[in-house]
Length: 174
Ligand SMILES: CC(C)(COP(=O)(O)OP(=O)(O)OC[C@H]1O[C@@H](n2cnc3c(N)ncnc32)[C@H](O)[C@@H]1OP(=O)(O)O)[C@@H](O)C(=O)NCCC(=O)NCCS
Image (tube, rainbow, N blue to C red):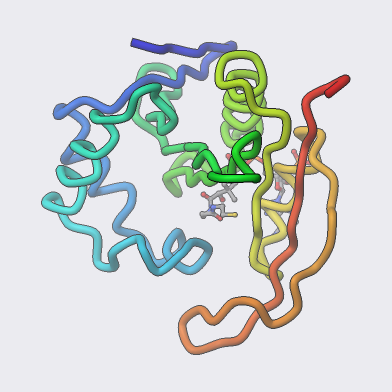
């Protein structure tokens, strides 16, 4: 099982024991507002179990639980692309609200980016952020991602049409 650690952060695979806490943290409109509609809202313990089951089938692991001081604090994952885009992956993440502002997302992004480049054979990792999500834009900037462009009116979320800020990071010397 893959585990990635730095300081007080550990990325590890999801276990059935995460079900209740995952549902508790993820059932938050402030998270849903910033991610795809694929994330159920409300987010139930059944949703959490189904998600955990999907993660447990991944080979290699690309979706991780984020632990902070031993507590489940969030989730981060890479989605490998296909066909001519197969050396790239999309990055997504969320942190439970009680843990915001502690630098957890930034450290988790740095850990998974290194894993993607060094263990998954990726050369490009990208992430799309809704226009109003300044905290996530900051996370990516702090982690060495660069703004590649703004996809104007590419998103409809909660009935509102939004621009998406597209960030990427390349493997050094690729
Ligand atoms: C965005 C999110 C991942 C940030 O997680 P986090 O662990 O709090 O992030 P960090 O502590 O590593 O860094 C946050 C940075 O954003 C800054 N920030 C927070 N709110 C901000 C705001 N409204 N405007 C500008 N900057 C802001 C913080 O000051 C910090 O930067 P700093 O270190 O330079 O001071 C978390 O709030 C979250 O999960 N939100 C909901 C889901 C989501 O947005 N997922 C990402 C989708 S792209």
